[in-house]
Amino acid sequence: MDFSIFSNLPTISTLFSEINADMGNSQIWLIIVMACLMLTIHGVAVLGIAGAFHTLDWHMQNSRIYGANFLSYFIAILLIVASHLGEIVAWAYLCVALKVFPTNPQTFYFAGEMYTTVGYGNYSLSEHWRILPIIISFSGIFAVSMSGAAMYSMMGTLLSRPNPKRQIETDVVTD
Image 1 (tube, rainbow, N blue to C red):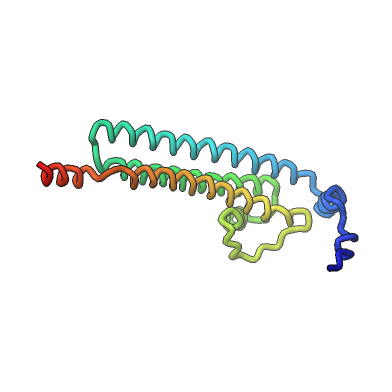
Image 2 (tube, rainbow, N blue to C red):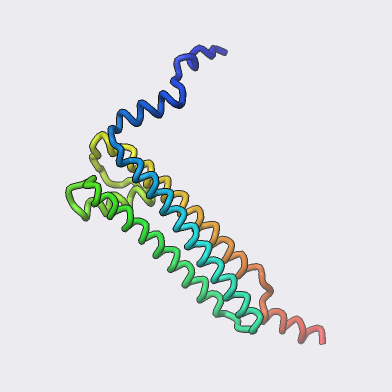
């Protein structure tokens, strides 16, 4: 096997320096910091929502209130969706502040498409903003992953408990 093709690869430091010089944009560090901050806030929010759901579910189960836990799950989903919409708006505002696009609606659509990784639109970015879709889409992917894990945990809680109606039927049959 010929490994000579790997001898001309740049070092990580060289590659990073070339990308940074190509962008010519010191504002990209602000965007990276904002992405990390938004992911941290999203993670804390999702943990809070899931924690509140599990606490509420535990109290309802101990109080023998059945069926309301599905309502609390629905509310948790709405809160998580609202957090994602809030992040898309935050990305749009950040892009408006940095004047990435000439119009606000175009900026909002761009932020939403990149965050959800739909990539439907045809956006022409200036050379120093070419990395922006990568950063926004990574933040969206990780935020949706955190949300999915929390919703999976909450759904697992709902599906793992015994059905109280079935338990009553079993008690009647065994008597």
